[in-house]
Amino acid sequence: MILGAICAIYVLDYYYFILLKGESFGSTLFFFLSIVFLIVFMFLLVFTFNFVSYTVHINESLLKSLKDSFIITIGNPLISISICSLNALIIYISFSVLTFLIPFFMGALIALISFAGFYMIYLKVVLMNETRSGYLRSV
Image (tube, rainbow, N blue to C red; front, side):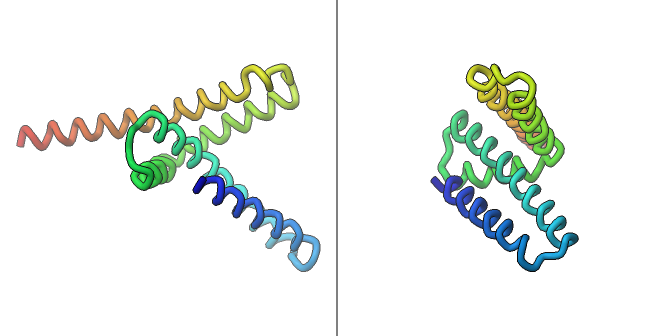
């Protein structure tokens, strides 16, 4: 519900931005704002994937899930960019080359890539916590 509202606000902002494009924006400013919208969209997309993975597999409160998903998304930008890039590649291949993948495999492949990225980050966090707690016990 919260992510749906955030996505709706984002889509409305983008629509408003596109409407203003024809009126008074210069090409350089429009290009810069397009890049900003693209980066925010990528962040929102990866944050949504991480939030769904965290909520489904870990039993925590909503606020802790939102906070931890945000930290996971921001804390590992390389994995977040990889998740977004691979999902974009899957969508591109599904719609342009292998259209029969759309009803059968596209959603499952996107979910697999997204969860694999989340799980890599989660395992790193668990290993860090175990190392830190083991280190603290020995001191």
